[in-house]
Structure formats: structure tokens, C-alpha cells
Length: 423
Image (cartoon, rainbow, N blue to C red; front, side, top):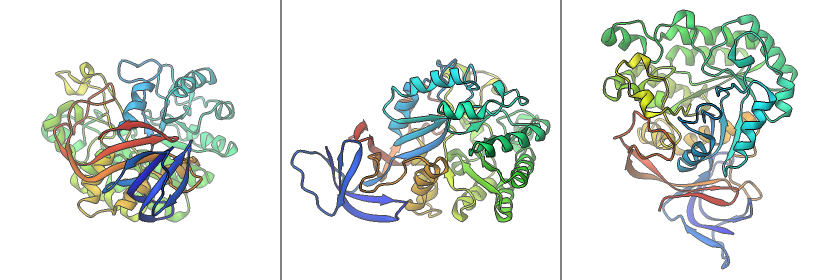
């Protein structure tokens, strides 16, 4: 048994915000009250700390199978726990791609060994070929939670329409990475800094927001659910808002890096700041924050994309892979760049990192209540830390190394067990 004493419980589902004690027995919260006495329980003194639902990150890359020099499911789980994340959804861009039941079962067997809750998408098309749909029914029955060709945009509107219809038939949804290759130059560099500093055509804004416009309107026509991944442009927020006003079943996420910083970071952090979609302008950063405030964007997800240091340490930045490790900095970036400046109250930040992503997948997660799951994060929201290159992840490709950020995770509890402790 665990007894969390004197913590400030913040539960976005019920909007409860109160200093209480929380008693955990087995995998459940059994009692929440102003004062609980339980001599046989292990006591965690949470005085001055926030007690919240474990974070839910619906966009991570754990690289297993086939790319385990970057990350594997075990080290990804450790990184999640260190960041206060108790539930994740992995993407399907492994090698081989999670396009068939055999590969899916291999991945889920590995995931089942870990202490956090690990789910996975399967791909929309066979091996991301953009043409042949996978067997949605068989993959769902084998344990996939939804479908995405994340990293590879679906260029064919015909294939996308067929995928939406298949998703509807199977009562599921599709998540989309929106960057039209026909409208893009070199990925990972926003068009402005690409032209002004690097002197080539970079990743254009129109490649993102035009593809979102096409896809949300096809989803609207098919009355299909669609989730837009890591949008980064001001116009993208407006397009999603328009589709939602029409009645389209569209949700959207933003990654912490896109509300925290801008394209100029490429000049100081180098390849660690190269990602898809790229870091954009200050106008775009402020617009995605407005999207979070207005409710157009309901989810914060990291797009945790670890790479080996040698892959990032190339002389020609255009040859470096895109992506950054994000699980261990996501909460701090939210506290520092959303809560501290007054853009969002802490409860709203937690909502977008817990109950909202959990609800998208109908996970039994993202809330704190009696008889509910004992997945809990205990953290200091005011304490500062300097980000170093020491991560639980195999990778250290973060552009935020050296930054002083708010927020320190003290405990991560999953199914009633302490899986991370920093005291």
C-alpha cells in the first residue's frame, strides 16, 4: 500500500484541486480524503507538490524492432517514467513496419514486459507504401489501438478516402502526419530560415496546411474521425477550427517544441533542432498556443523521436535525421512556456496531457478518483532544473540541453508501483 500525504491533488476530469491524502492499494486508488491514517502503508510526503494523473503521450517512437541503436521499448519506457508519463502510444514506423499481425504481436509482447502502459498504432498502408490498406480488422483484434503512417504523408486522396471508410467500418480512427511532399523542399528546416540562412528551399507552411485542409474535408465528407498530428502553422490551427465548426470529427495535437521555441534555434542547437514538421516562426508559436487556449488543439504529445548521437553529428545538417527526444522534457516545457507566462492555467495544461489524450483512445487513464487506476505523477511545478545530456532514453538529441526549465518530477507511479523516483 502507498499513502501520498499532503499533496495538492489536481484532477482535470473532475476539476478537483485540493490538498488531500491519497491511499493506493494494489493497482487502484482506494481512498481520497483530507486526512488518512494507514500505519501499514508506505508514506510519500507530497507537501508542496502537485499530485496529478500520470501523463498520457499518444505520439512516441520507441524504434523497436529494427532501429534499437536509437531506442528500444525498454529504454523508451524508462524515459517515459522519468518524464512522468504512465501511458504511451507508439507509432508504426519500425523496421519492419507494423503492418501485419505477426509484427504487431512481437511489439506488444515486448511492450508487455514494461511497467508503464504501452500501446501501439498499426500502419494505414502496407509498409507505408501509400497504396494498399492494411487489414484494419485483424490488426485491431490483435491489439492495435488505431492507425497512422506517421512520418509518411498519405498523398493519394483516393487511398485516404478508402482508409476513412475502412476506419468507420471498424469503429476506429486515423492519425495523420501532414506535409505534402510535392510542396516541400528539404525537410526539417522552416522555409524562412532555410532561404535566408541556408540558401535552399525548406519545409513550407503550405505543405502542411493545404494537406490538412484536404484531409479534414475528406473526413468531413465521410463522417470519419481524424486526428491531426503535431500541427505547427498558424494557418493549420485556423483550418482545423474551420473544420470543427463545420462539424468534422477532427482533433489535433501540438508537440511541446512547437509552442516553446522557433526556427532560430537551428542556428545554435544545430541538428538537435531539426525535426518534422520544423520549428516555425514566433507568429506560428503564438498561434498554436492560441489553439490550445481556445480548445481547437486538445492534446499535447511529444513526438518523442530518439536518434543515435552519431546520426545527428554530421557536418551536413541536411543529412541528419529529423526528430528530438521529448518524453523527459515535455512537462517542464509546458510549465515553462505555457503556465509560467500565463497562457494556460496548470489544470488546463494537465488536461491536455492526461484526460484528453486518454479520452481520444478511451483508455482507463488520465484521471484520479477512488476506484480509479493508480497511475500518478508527483511533481514540483515551481522548482527549476537545467536540462543536461543525461537522459533515461538511449538518445540525447534534445535542443533544450542547457536550458533552465520549470518542473521536477519526484515520483511516477504506475498501477500502484513506484517506477521512477527523484528525491
